[in-house]
Every structure is written in structure tokens, then in C-alpha cells.
Image (cartoon, rainbow over all chains, first blue to last red; front, side, top):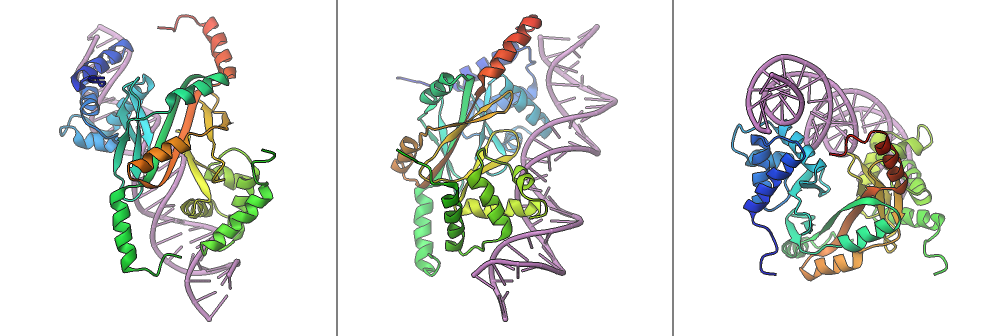
Length: 160
Length: 160
DNA sequence: ATATGTGCAAATTCTTTGCATTAGA
DNA sequence: TCTAATGCAAAGAATTTGCACATAT
């Protein structure tokens, strides 16, 4: 229980090895992406990742291609927050978690909670193999609730 | 336990009322969409819905607009099966369920199982209001597993 | 009567693809 | 060396928007 996450450095090194194991080359763009994903928090869109890289490391197209490759070998997981772009996060494998997204401010919080076991067990029971899942939770965060209450106080004619 | 789902007709009628309650008009395109969603199974893409409607009822654009309106008032739920388009299903409210999608044949099966309670309770505990979630499960269905085994038997040089 | 909803066309946005060039193993 | 990876430009696909016209309430 001391430290349940591997260090970012360890994850980064392991991820490069995973690339090699799958006969994929360890290139600058791939390292840059994995560097970010193993050291920073939120899941990122391809564009956000590209924006976070040092200028000129690679093209946005390459980011898309790298992420596709990484998803195939389960190095990253893809999330959908429902706003039209996909987001990617490092796949820690065992230590699975989910996000709760505020529908108002779009803030993201990580939930250290996962229903994977029961879910995937059930899927296997009905004959599925290689089971994975995506789960996102949406709500309105406490801060945005407060703002809403204030706004409602001002214009109280809209509450149907 | 006799019949836990409301009849399609009941759901349809109630959905029209929900439109009225929100001061939205009950139009032909909206009726056509709700007709399909309350009577047919799978979640559908905007294009699939449009294809299922009688010729000439409305434009595809209108389907998109109707679905957006309906999602806002929680008449429908949007699902993402990870293939680039969103799918919509009638939101039965209480009786929540999920899908398991075969990654190979893209078949969809409904799971009469939901983790909503524990999830949403947890989200509320940490201060979120108006909590919802999306959950999709992916796997390889038994039929596709069988085919894969056969294929592997033929070309057994590719297993890394 | 009139604001809301719709059709058509065109724009936007995200993501993918083709092909010549570069660079890891 | 030699195949996999990348850059650039352009295509593709899903969804959204603008504006004139139609239609529920």
C-alpha cells in the first residue's frame, strides 16, 4: 500500500520496452508522447499532446499515428468525454481508474475506483474474450453548482 | 417482476409529452425518430435512424438536430462504440443497461446489468450533482473467437 | 400570428491516407 | 542496409451552421 503506482520513469522505460517487444521502433515522437503520458495527469487529445511537445518534434499527423500504434499494443487507452475528440492516457494495466467530467467547466477528476472486475467477469461468462471497457462519469462539480445557484438568484424567471 | 419495461407505445406517448413539457414542438421528424427508438432495439447512428425512416420524412441534418434536442432533455442517451460515430438509444431512465460490442464483427449485445448506483453514489459523495455515466464493454464474441482459432490453424506462423 | 423547426448547401472539426523522404535496428 | 516511421498535403467522414422557407401551437 506504500506506493501503488510505478514511478513515471519506470513506466516510461517499460513503455519503450513494450514498443520494442512489439517490433516497433523507439522514435523521437513516440518518446515525446510517452514522456508526457507517463509524467502528466489528465488524458490528452492528440492536439493537446502535440501542443505540449517541444516545437518541431513532429507533426500532428504523427501524433495520431503514434497513438493508434500505441493503442493497438495497449500502451495507451482512449477515452471519450463526449465533446468530439478522443483523449488518450497511459495504460497502467492493473491500476485502472476512471474520470468524472464536469459538464459545465469540463474539469476532469480521477476516480480511484473501478468496476472492471465484475463487468469483465460478466462479459466472459457470456462468452466474450479479450474484454475491455470504457467508462466515463459526467456531472456538475461543486464549484459550478455554486455558480449556478448564484446565477439563478439573479434571474429567477427561467426555472420552468 | 412481471413486465419491467413500459410498452413501446407507452414510452412513445410519454416521450411526446416530455417534448411538450420542455416547450418543444411535436413534429413529424421527431415523432419518426422516437417511433424508431421506442420500438427497435440497438442504439442507432443518426444515419441509421435516417435510413430507417420512411423516405422523405426529413433530412439527415434534421435527425442530428432532433437528437441534440432530445439529448438535452434526456429523452435519449448517446453511446460511443469507438468507431467514429455516435449512437443513440431511448433513455428509459430507471431501467439502465449497457452494451457489449464485439471488436471483430461489431455485433452488439445488451447487458441487463448496471453499475450506475455505486458509481453515481461515489460521484455525489465527492460533490458532483446531476451525475450520469457512459459505459461500454468491448470484447470478442464466441463466434469470432472460433473463427480466429480456425484462421490460426491455417497460418500458424504469425503468432510472434 | 409567430416563434420554432426544417431543408439545402456549405463550413467546420477531427482523423486518416498517399507518397516521397528520413531514420531506427 | 532496408523496412518502418514521418512530413506534408490533401482526402474523408461525421457533425454543425446559416439562412430562407414551412409549420406546430
